[in-house]
Image (tube, rainbow, N blue to C red; front, side):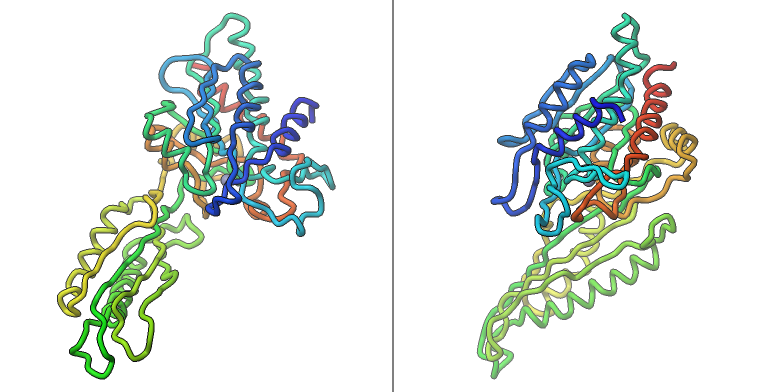
Length: 385
Ligand SMILES: [Zn+2]
């Protein structure tokens, strides 16, 4: 492994960029994107920082110009860590048994030095006064592990534009072209309290919730019967009843009950249609139980994503890796890049079972194959006509 690559990896790992829904643990990513921008600038990339929130930014680094082109994309934040369960300091790149340990090695700050190494050939074409057939864009986002705020800001700004995108999330260097969506929703039922001795004195939100749960479980069964995609380990959509809170005392009619659930649609299932169907199925219960029923998303939701099996990017990655493309069991920024008009593929050197775990690592023997693979994709989509 060359020293530049190792130094860049060590620098990114030594620059904490934890994000967390608990604000007291949430950090910015500016120092990370500034390191990447300085290395990209040395190679001849034009760098643009898109500020998303205080201390948080996306980096769009572009080599060459014109329409089309290839994006190499990653997120710069990591999840929090369990200090006591790490064998070495999570912020010190540490080599042991052919592996490089550190928080973010696999998921996924480790991808950026590899993408930069792969860009050398394209950079030398430009330095020699030549032109790329289509641009090469290095994209580094913020807040992927929490709110996807970085990816959302890109969609809102309508950039970057390109034809293809590789997202270097940990896939063990196997291409993944599908992922499920994620919806988290809240159902609030409000009735009227009253003395428990006489049901006519109130309208029970709990009784209505019992019926609503039955509807949701029935809907889940129907979804599983109607939708099936064998490329996923769990081949059907899922609907998880996550938590429920209601009422206060056994001798009072329950006035309010709230349920939160998680729905993971397959590609081809639209989130707004799912929300409309659920609302339609629950609506009659309001009349029947004399309560109000309100459904609302806990966050905007991430749509499911499918890149066509015959996309030139999928075919090229399958030929180069020798692996048929599959489906991700985890969420990524792919749906947002797809919304920006790119065929997105998830493909990176780490292993997903080491991500979000103590002693996260990337295997040293994955590094050069990743650089070779990315270099071949750059040659195919940016250098040749
Ligand atoms: Zn990740």
